[in-house]
Length: 436
Ligand code: GLV
Ligand code: MN
Ligand code: MN
Image 1 (cartoon, rainbow, N blue to C red):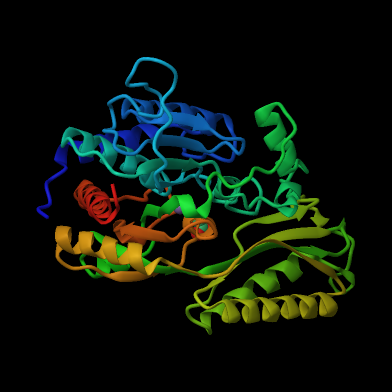
Image 2 (cartoon, helix red, strand yellow):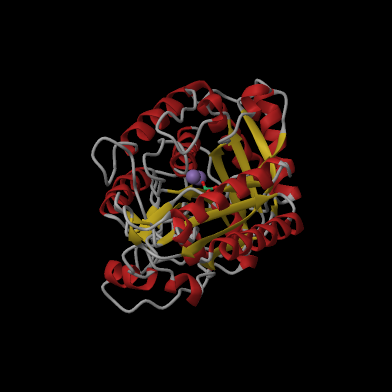
């Protein structure tokens, strides 16, 4: 199957990434968190682009943006879900399977503009490209902009995809942010009604799979001089909060030997986590947020809450590392006469990508850039949660210096063009492989 250039569509993609990258909750830097005002503006902007492409758009109870194109319908022409060829009533579309494409629209604090956004905007542009070529797909497509993947507002991630996949649990709803506001309260404020955890948006048997395009967020593709690669598996991830409690007191009058300084204990733990992970590659362990109370220069820290994020491609190794870290935390606390408590907020096992979808994606990658490369993702992705509902596959796009979760995050237009060609080619291959 000849691969055609998508030059004008990839220019549109670049322009839209830049425009969405300006939709922020904070002046001067990009931050969009779960159900925030900027997330509402992002849904409106991206929803407009979806409508322009002929998709039927809705926002679900968890704040996810969903654009749907029925089967055998060219994006941009009337959606057969809404028209009646005989001029009376609403025609029900023939039941067909649905392919899910997407990623998340939320960001970390002071983010780059590609993480998540690329995987939402690229499929919209890809459907537009197919329309221009007069290609209709024999399956329905849903483009998904998940409302929460990063776990910034509440330390547990994937609230958006969990809502869509019917995987939101009571424990997720009880998670509280730093001000003690729960996920449930925020959802009820968003919907202005009582929140009941939704059922999955689809039955598994009605789905073809979920395909997510994402920047690599690491250096491998750059090192191998490849624009794109295909993900074989996503590493498992544990997150939680570790609280050290000591005794606040006067910084000028309390002798050093009598102190129970929670921050000194927490600092020791940070170094322990670093040393353990350094010695156990490919284990990674990160303390990314620290809250010190009462937080004054002349008061001994009485309480410190640390975030801990532990990842490994093998679940057994991740669990073993976590146990070692928690034993280490207890030891530090004992020696320093502190109390310590662990509150897990997220626990996801490693996820293997679908061999069938991945093989098809690899064919497309080879058709576009001749060589394909298989990578394991150390980053978490919405595909982790979607894998409970349907087979998943992921396309990675090279990013400069492997840098992500940083405002300098960058993917070259030429690489985005390759990714777009791959996804367009993949959709055509999947169409050929699907009964019409
Ligand atoms: C999401 O970007 C994660 O891997 O933390
Ligand atoms: Mn992401
Ligand atoms: Mn991210």
